[in-house]
Length: 258
Image 1 (tube, rainbow, N blue to C red):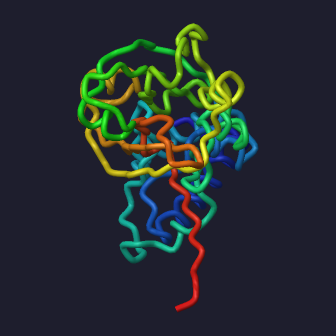
Image 2: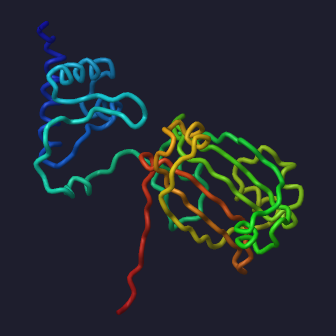
Image 3: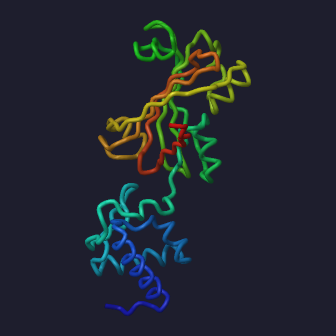
């Protein structure tokens, strides 16, 4: 085997040290390449060469794709719920459930480059569930907006929003719609005051998986939201599907007197 250069040997040694710490903390995967390169202050090319050395030593197994990475082959030595889970979190969108903000605003505030792809904008009859959420009758016309959100170029979430068509006439004349909340505020004088969200895990259909660049039936975070004006009138009902490996939910709770 060819002797590695001093620079490469240094990076390999640093990675071995990181592996030992990760194993002791119960981790099963190294950070993403970009994060590793920044921590070690090396180029991505040099890092990949070092990872190739570790893989040849069977210290790691690398898997391609967005759900892949460098997986550690050693058996972890920590308890099943390692304290390392409380350490500095990996780079994900912190989806703040206490704030009423659009995804692009959240992404910008957290240092991501946001992109929105408008996939469809139409008027359609309301389903029973959407009608109940918006306070109208099943079959009544509602505005449907389907948009794909990307963070730093990677698909993050797929969102579908519904609005009562009669409350927001000519909304689609502003197509393509970027920030819905800004448009409602500026053109209709409507400000969202409250929002109720329900969260659960769902499976990605083939169509959704293709749009989010994931495998069919992969788990997704589904957020069902109904937002309202300060008088309680429904503004919009939406369903957001987030890739869980790119998203973190944040909740703040105020504890009252007992």
